[in-house]
Length: 509
Image (cartoon, rainbow, N blue to C red; front, side, top):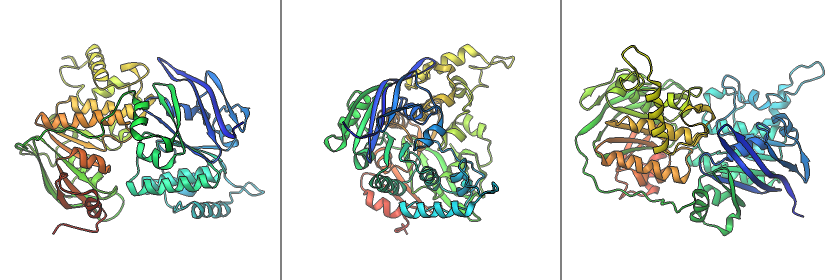
């Protein structure tokens, strides 16, 4: 009899129009890191939400240490020692790190008064033990995404959880933070914690997990020992076909100028200095120019300035020769700029709108979708959304009427990509377009970016993924501390050299 920390046996979970989990069995050994792999919408997060008590399954049972348990809500899960770090963090932004960690299990004295000092000591001891450096007094809204994630991990450890669920934990981290997180996970497993790790980054699964369970379209495909498998085999199990990791690109001669930035400076929200300092570059028709850099070096603010989300402190932006420095966001959009934003929840979607309404967010006022009296043409909107859903394989329970909030992160991302590319823009600004996508969807997105370039569009790609930078771009601009520190040809530069420029160790004179 094997010693399992948790067993999920024959779990079935249904939602309107979709069976998210179809008779799935998952067994987690004590002290192992077990990866859960699958495409966007394969049912990974749903299965973990069942284990954490956020959903109740229609069929199946959960056992802990061999005993059947009922998990009706997250409090039951916590009582059983099960903790979860969600893909989109569940933190209170205006609270401090310490307050977020103890929220719900606040230590109190005899008179019911809050004993923060002892909580602080426990948090500091835990962060020391597992290498999770955090500042307990910092407000969550002021800290980096990597730090927010550590706060979530400390929340689990503070509750003495033995079974730790990580849902897509690296989707928002820099390469350095990912390496640190992998090491933290190894330390936790070495301490005897059992870890379930949802991911679709094959390199991470290969480097950190002991075993891997693969789901496809809500069904269980199999469990393999990681040591005995390959990334190609895992991707075949996950997608059901062979996936090409290289990007096919024909040689294209860049044409006329589409975008020009002259001395662009953008203020920072976090500190007194400017986040972007005197940046100038050009993007032409038929080329993909990539801005590479470690997160937090001004890329976000540069995109905000370019797309109209933030005003410029200085400088000028020209789109096809016309000055758009002070143009509204709608004006930029109707002049031919499309924007796949970095934060899909904040700037990409209205989560409580239906999928079809999100698809026409920037075009609803056009004659195609609104009649002369100003009423929306509902039929036209629905058939337009249905076409995009079909074309881009956006998976949702109820098609065009699905609420955006209920879709998986990867499918939300696909919906945004579909909307922005279908506007037929002159300039496509794609920020982290493949964040949170599986290998099949990444392959598809890269093809779409290259197709835009081949159709004579200008593409500005902002990415933290070095593989993506090297594979997809025609020119690479490296940003460090708010400045462009070098321009490179992906055919001749090495990843190591790019890394040195990104870290600020080297700079072009």
